[in-house]
Length: 331
Length: 240
Image (cartoon, rainbow over all chains, first blue to last red; front, side):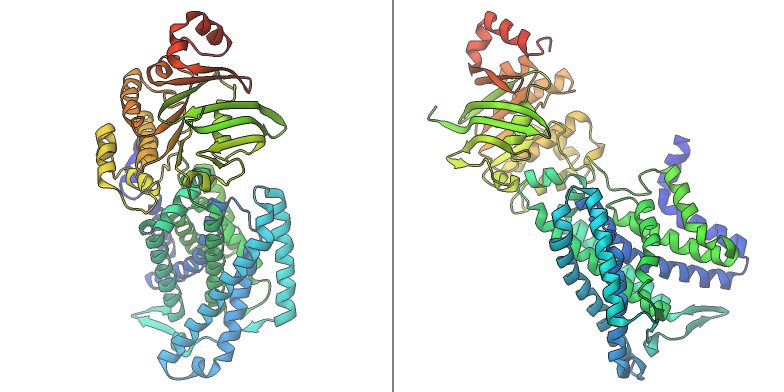
């Protein structure tokens, strides 16, 4: 068993899992064009979930905070993006590709900025008083989530809100008999860009070094002379901003959103954080891609199993690796 | 003592509902190694953690170079020039040796002379510079923890049981390294290993059950078998 494990590690270890699932799906689906379409859809979905999950994972890992209110940032991000796109309807529906993209980027930026600001407020007012007390964290963040959902209802109402999609991102790219939705390609590339930026920030900057160290041993970071509470605020704001960005991208992906959007996605987000390993950005990315791919393949191959597929994935991975696929190293 | 760099005066510390330190008072003179000896559970680690502000003193005062640090946050205490090497070494396993040491520098840049000195003391650090710390052996992890404490000039280093679980050959190397480190800083060393403590210590404080039971020169304790017997039978793990 150890020998098999070391051979697998030499060829990529757990990073082989999405490849293995994609290969198995290819064999089961049998039609290459359908497989490509489903794979791109899975990767795009995975990247959007990664945006929402990575911040939560860092908040868990560094701050030891169970934030059940994280989905509120996703929902607010989605609605703020939808309202921004609606306000820029001329740009969204116009023929200028530059204005189309500018409208979407502005919508994503507005959602992200709101997420960061709301994250600051949330950390200072709601989370800070209950550090080191998990039970109170669960209670107060769920309470804050309920308040946030009522605010969404008060501002945008309970009816589904249509999200205009920029004209340039409408339609599909046709290559041979393969059709790939352009928005999915955009979502995948944006998620990838955010991952690369996070990877760079965590591995090539002093703040990133402090965050990685803090995830492992907060007390020692303080004993080295650094104020961990300042890192907490920064990470919480970044995590909330990423959740809002993910919500904004998801809104454009779905086209129709309701205030329940964040809550519905949170199950997937928690699965990603748990199977990826707490505090690990690589783990979040891996978990998100697995969840995205599996959701699309299973929905096509075994529609009745689609709701249970990610729960099954989580159970199998936790039986195999109880701390997740790529947990942050502790000590 | 007028030349004390650190003074503890009637320090009481509680952990949860347990009263651990019962009025601990002692001075650490500037320069050299001062040893805090005691058996398991005597209150040695609690004393160091209280000095670092990781656990709060309920009563009493801790004064470092005329600054009352009793209520200061840990990062502020560290920035006054106190380094801490905990019993579990506190290394960051997912970070490389270089990253672990870079974190301990105030500016993020290494002073070449100090880095050369660290490499001279612990050549393994240079050898495993780019290796992730979790892959180091126990002795190498201890060397990394100490290297991190000395990579910048510190007024004082608090070290908690550095010989625990180490092979005798590594302990001998540690003694030589500590002697050199103590030439330009003050070390407060927590130990159970009396031979190690005797080889390094100038002053010694013995703690038992959260109370100071002896405070004096190491040379006097080493020369007084009767006192050793009394204290060792009380608290020390003499067989080491």
